[in-house]
Length: 351
Image (cartoon, rainbow, N blue to C red; front, side, top):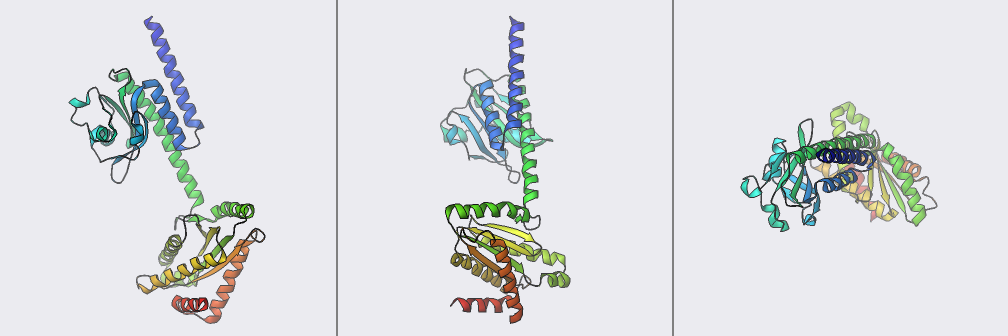
């Protein structure tokens, strides 16, 4: 009979880890993978409450990200200060632990029970770590049958946590690779490759819903002279400043791209020419104010802008580019020495 029980335990264990492997390899998102892992933890250990907390690398505090079981809806978002409570101890030491009776353990933090109304009796907790660096904790509270957790269950849970940690690392690196491929390393804006993906989708949406689409193209005037006179570090700083100006003058639905070199593109869905002109004006004025501060190089921008509806949206990028170069020709004819002169004329035109 004992041999039969051991065989059944081994079969369950093998089946469980097979399921965990499938969950990790088939999950399309990090959240989906973690939800599946947490579901299977509940099936094997049958706790009354189980949670996953992630560690903030800067502050060291832990935040409940996923919680299942009694009073679980009250846990997500709750933060545990660095080193506090049993989970804090696990995160700081990187060690697993079984607490049969929390009332006898000085590390127990009753704060969470006070918030949830749940009564913690026993805990089993393990760190999520890769290369000895802890980035989270899995915690199980109170077995359904009222019995304490066992060393065997602790070992099993740690193995599961190791599976989950490997999966999280995989998703982290995939996300990092995706970001590298889609963003500009200097300004952290989306890059031209991203524009090639975004623009066709916005063009299609414009046609489908009969909404206007506006595209602004910006060029930093005399950028080569800035690099030649002040050096590439100064030029990089101007690019970063421009990126920040663009980001703080658009809506959350708009997108900013570094198109290449000293050129930037702002894509504004469902935006008329009149509203897009307001954005252009804000960018001009923001740069002018920054120049007046005296803390940066005084530079100026040329901006091309085009808005279109469903019938003329296919060539919106080329028309914005054409408008940009008309603007640059106009600037050269006016022989503007600085942005402030340009802004004054720009504002006069709007009166």
